[in-house]
Length: 113
Length: 113
Image 1 (tube, each protein chain N blue to C red):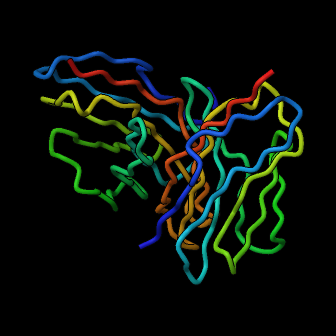
Image 2 (image 1 turned 180 degrees about the vertical axis):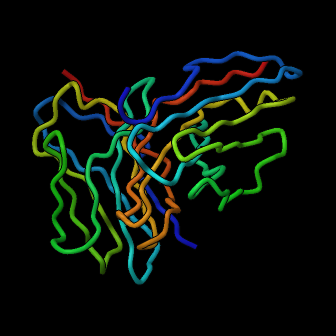
């Protein structure tokens, strides 16, 4: 595997379900990001982890819970979501100090019924 | 706060014609600028970036962009487009040295045969 991978690629869940999104980066980076991409809106930065510590939490509802067990893995735990949370969730990584260029995964298309 | 404007939500253009996708950002002392492309059902791929130095930046797939500090613009150009360039294009800006990207709302480029 190379670059940034995300699983699953597609997820359909009910409002009462609990699920997790997984992101893995194979680039040796030390920062990882979760973004939400909704139709007709700019990408929204949700969370940032730098050196496995959360450095950004953009007023994201508590039904989204991130976890970064090490510098290569990032999870987004989902619980009691709403239909308006349906979107493409993108993970990215970067190496701090190198222009912070971000490399993106293919995303998880989430549908909440 | 930093902001990015992509005025054109959709740009149709015939194959082999030139194209320009516009991007303007709010002023800042020092910024990094990026253009990303997103093909259907995929994540974002970096086309090119401006960090410093020459204001004309060349990227992948024959794209280039020019940084214009006085007009706070970073327009993307290609002299001759192909059908395969059909995709969504995102402009992003970050204050130099920070990890936080601000994205535009995207421009959908549709290349017509």
